[in-house]
Image (cartoon, rainbow, N blue to C red):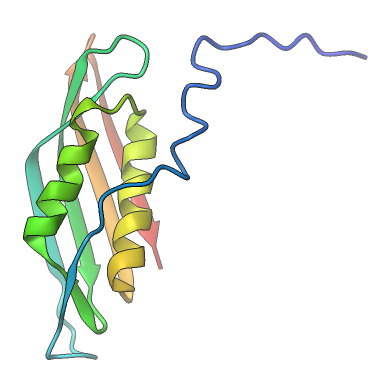
Length: 132
């Protein structure tokens, strides 16, 4: 039996996101390796763009991780986040792309990225990505 596949109006709008070249996140050497030190970075003014409407999306991003040898350098991380300001991207993709790029930058023991996106049309979205 042949299925009728209905094409979504979002189809093909996000295929480029996993391979998207983003600005480099710098790191610095952590002097207490193997310690039980957990870091939490809050970004209360994150912005990106809805890929369908072009309207801005606002969120609080929270990055939590346990460094092994390196920590995220915050100035370069801020510049990295500015890249998203005019980018049409789904909330779920923001969180996973940020997680992937941060893990690549510092190779933590574990990392969690949470995106709490502001309500739009009565719907609030929270997305959590975890690296273990």
